[in-house]
Length: 135
Image (cartoon, rainbow, N blue to C red; front, side, top):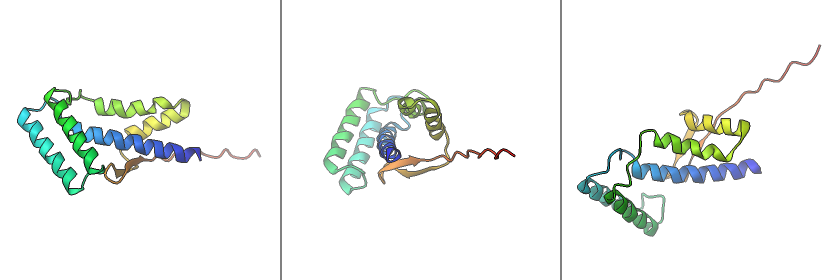
């Protein structure tokens, strides 16, 4: 049961970061006002036609807030920030669980799903050999 709670929590965290990452992707420098306005128009179109994974009202609010933040220059991300944010999710764990979490964040294999479908699932397989029985 604990594993299930972790999975749902992890999916929600990953979906939220994917949305944040999608809104900041490619924004190494503060976007020009025309570029920010064009992004806002694209996001509003996504809200209107139902392609967003949010309800329309929430989608519009998020698009408006992203535009305001872009105008303030707050959507720029430092190089490596996405990876750093991904690894911060592992701070909730200790020991082997934390090492496993960090491996899932770094490993491109075993990733499935999307924010659009409700979350990204990261999965790793750890093979633990069974010791040979004593003679």
